[in-house]
Amino acid sequence: MFITLEGPEGSGKTSQLPELAAFLRESGYEVLITREPGGTPVGDQIREILMNLKNVSIVPRTEILLFLAARAQHVEEVIRPALAEGKLVLSDRFGDSTLAYQGFGHKTDLATLQALLDFSTGGLKPDLTLLVDVPVEQGMARKLENSSEWNRLDAYALAFHERVRQGYFALAEAEPERWLIIDATEDKASVQQALRTAILSRLARHGV
Ligand code: TMP
Image (cartoon, rainbow, N blue to C red; front, top):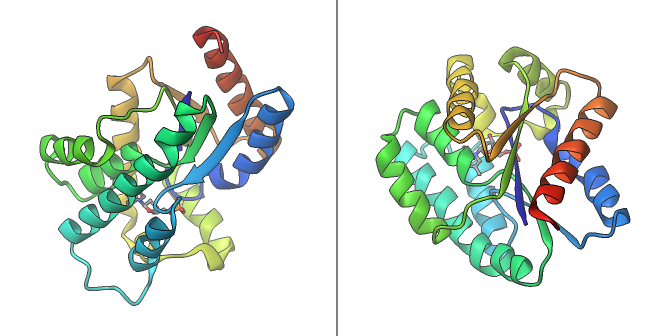
């Protein structure tokens, strides 16, 4: 089963993942944790280009194609093989980040983006997507507290990040079967519990 974690900046989803994976392993599942952009040696090199604060000249179309290039590699090299082995794949971001950030955030035409996205994933879609949600100002404040995490993409204006958040809500509303919204304004332990409950109930529904 393929599970993705999505969310605006500073939602804390990345720091929840190791504990979540450990819990699922203890529950008897074979788990692979991965992330985007990245997840492969080629993808990590693309990630460095995308995040580097020096690369101020990157234009939106270049940004899109770099995310999608990293994703194509990620799907073929990591995600599909792991799913074929029956593993539970947990990815920190996937295609919905492109729709939320490049589509809603940068206002790229969504139909064009969806076609490019399908090309990059070869049609692979998550079985479950958890939207780890936090209001923009709270999330950005959390990120600023830990300035080592600050990257080129965080430097976009607050209005951009608000469109991203609203974009996530629109995506979740369009596919309620796939999405679950987790309130990440709660303390870390409560968010962890909510993530565990969401995943276990979906696994039970899939009979896994
Ligand atoms: P993160 O590792 O902190 O989640 O950073 C990844 C950044 O890249 C974050 O700002 C979201 C952004 N992003 C996109 O804009 N589009 C994408 O397709 C992906 C995967 C990430």
